[in-house]
Length: 117
Image (cartoon, rainbow, N blue to C red):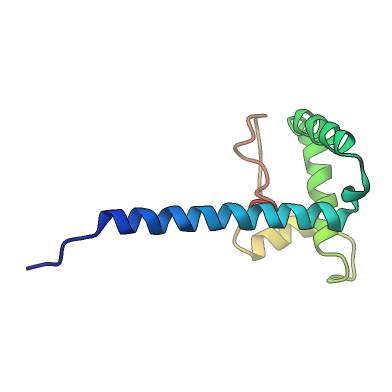
């Protein structure tokens, strides 16, 4: 006969794992803010920048320009040539991620950048 599953223990383990992932995400976000120099800004200014960014991220050309800037930031010192949309697409293909196209502004097809993953 099989041993019965301890559902409560499994739920607690999943809850603990989710809590640890949230804490890691917050830590990484704080590190990103510090690495970009945004920690020198007043909190009100930083919040305003983020709110405006969320609104403007619905505009595809703006989003693509930001994606290129972000890729260049994360690859600083790791590559000798600047990041362009062509070599970024090639790098994504090489990583098995494929080209990303986004036809809408709902945020479902955008970048899953460094803060999230």
